[in-house]
Image (tube, rainbow, N blue to C red; front, side):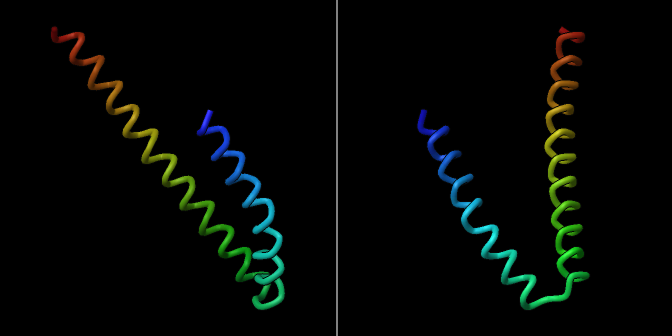
Length: 70
């Protein structure tokens, strides 16, 4: 139950902070720089996801191999 409350709190905070950060970025930087930041964060998210999936698959593959050997 506590995790749901924390998740809801984080989502609410992000919904309040995001427009403020967006307005600041649009007022102070060029649109091409903002898109570059967006692309960079998307690549970081994809790489993180690939690393986590790769580790999960490695553990599952190791477990399958151990079952075959035993």
